[in-house]
Length: 396
Image (tube, rainbow, N blue to C red; front, side, top):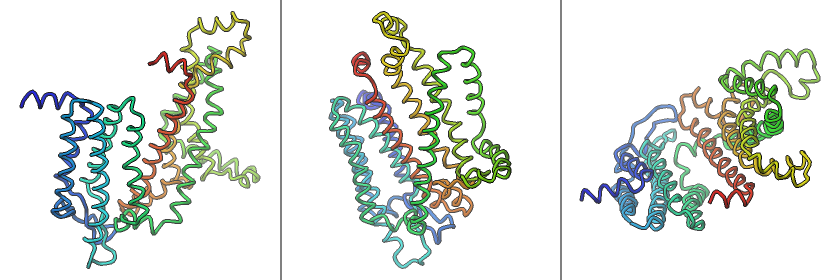
């Protein structure tokens, strides 16, 4: 018994942490009943939220997931734990939607049902288990895609079918549906434009830093200093000079350049995106083996040809890693831009804070998290595609 427990613990510590979170979640509140959108309400445990049938389904699925950890073959273990984690995710959401409607029957129209700590912890636990499962399925790409996409596809079907409409977050969405679409696209515009400008400015600065010792120190000194300035402070610092410029030169106001709004947000977000892009460009070019560059010169290539055909292709994966970091960072920092009238999903976060409405905060925060994960995944795929095949073979 003791040896089996030791094998269970040491086999995959990442998956173990997911199981622990899952077990703890069973002891917490799963749904929260609120008399209205502002009052904190009271928590309902698993049995009160899902009744006996739903409670046994959730516990049974968690037991199945934990038992899959005893499978010796890591590929089958990853497949079974990944599938059971997806089943937990699907069952949790379905039961939450159905029971929210049941709990609201006969209650006042202002009553709300929110997701409790147990569900949020369950989602965190299943995410960790899915991550561990993908790692165990290395070399089985189709199975990795199935494990990764099954829960997402099921969630989209459940959402589009309207089975979650009785949850308070969805009710907030229905109230702000038109505004949500506007702010969502504004958020994307903010980080896409700022990161694009960061790439346009940062990559040449990174190249310049590798070519000139005199340029290297001031470039990194300035970008490191700006990175330490709190985001809200940097937004505030830009208000005064841009306001002065817009009043002195009226045509700038016509172009949208003023103390608050889109322009100062883009400037601040671009400044924050520079350091990872410049740093990765610098490191990517500096780490190249000089013998490779000398071989190119020895073959009759000019300095520019060596730079274009050897240095840039070999440094591209690391440069794109910098762009990936800047992009994910930009998704988060764009939230603060709402405070200076630039819009974005931060509008809901700060509106929710002002109104003490947690579900309105979630309406802004959840899409930001999902957007950051999507951007991160897309950039990782881009990095993989851009990596020269020779480098991939060497790494393998």
